[in-house]
Length: 435
Length: 143
Image (cartoon, rainbow over all chains, first blue to last red; front, side, top):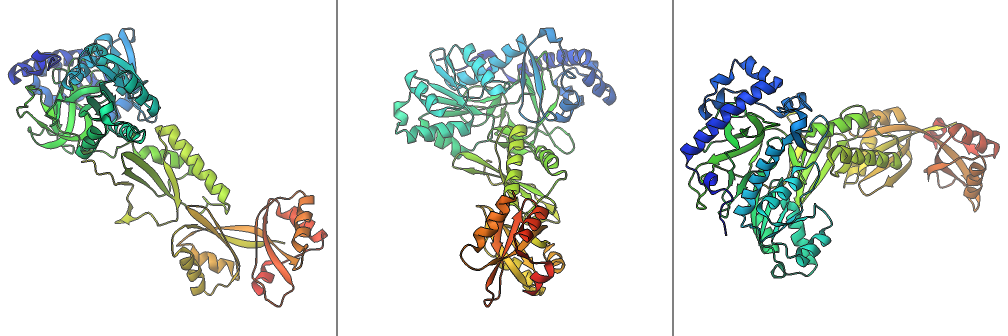
């Protein structure tokens, strides 16, 4: 069994990797400067010219990009190739305002799938495996990414998409699936359903799972591994850079190797933007050095993380990132969906004509996230009948589904029942212990 | 002729009714009629009180309160008294959203019902024509 998908890259010594990154970075900066007016302007404003970037050590001179830039430049402002050369669009969930639309040339898709192929190989996958992809298909990068990577490796690919759990298990058993790819919470749910159906993990042919797109804990890993009789591997990525496969776990399960021949990772102080030394905790920033259509330079992920170059027993020399330890903004990941409190404010404003006091309460019961929005009623929002209050709850609930794609329990509560600290309402209570 | 009712939104939690009625007690407000409509998560406390302005003022910092016009109608306290009232409203094509009864002196031989209907004006004329007595805000404060 091959241990690596691309041994040369995955075990390259640091100096050679740095040289490769430098060469690619120089070319990428030139490509972006010449083709992306939006970024050229940022560089000009900062007084940086493409010639100033001679290698990785000059990376810090470049301006950052953030989600706000993606919003400003929506949809084509950061595109670096003519649309006629693009073959794919993927997108994140969320409102129009927060939506990220990423473009891919065929080379970009190949690079992405190659990254995922490394992840599948690291999880022990070969062309003899049956890979069940139970991530959602569609605009979401989860389904498309693992699907493509599975093809690349040559696995027999089962494009199940998410949902219909009993059918998932039926196919898993009838077609002898060996690798399961989905969100960790869905994997946990499949595990619970397997047990409920009276099936023992020994009856399954699964050997590995590749799970990502949302935070999960070591406890969750152990419980999934036990319930499905597998080894569970983490995978990391974001639509802005490509999708899952930006980083992946090896058999050591001690962090995710970043595919740094394609993505240069930096850790910065989220307040000052200063680059922090290896081993520091800070915000993760990615520079795509091989992407053609949507090449983001110094993109701030808002994920708080630590990088390490400590020697990994698997033999890979690729830098490792820990599981994201939090966010430097107020984004929540609920049931795998990115949720910003501002999106909920938008709905409240629309339905009430003003923003009432509200609070988002997130918890995890068993392995499933619960999502509740408490809204303080105020005079004028209440007209004496139960049906009007229930209609209001229903309307809010429907509008939340519309905007986020997931359901929230709406609880209308009395004034002043949402606790305030120093007069300021606490908007988010996340009871999940994920770090 | 209508009377003003206070509706208070209350979450289902222990001590809520005690707290709300306690506020009214402290402010010397007498409750003339009361009902609680409940769901799993919240309830609506509906009240006819002796002094509506004072009641509103005293509750406003602690609760969401709304004022609604309802009818206070006297029904004969005997079999068929209620049925005749409902029949009168039905024939006038008026829908009753909810109703409850008010506190009365035990010596009274009549019952007083509080009704929320979809059309106060038409209900008042239908009931008056039907021979029913309606109480005013002042009457309610007195009973």
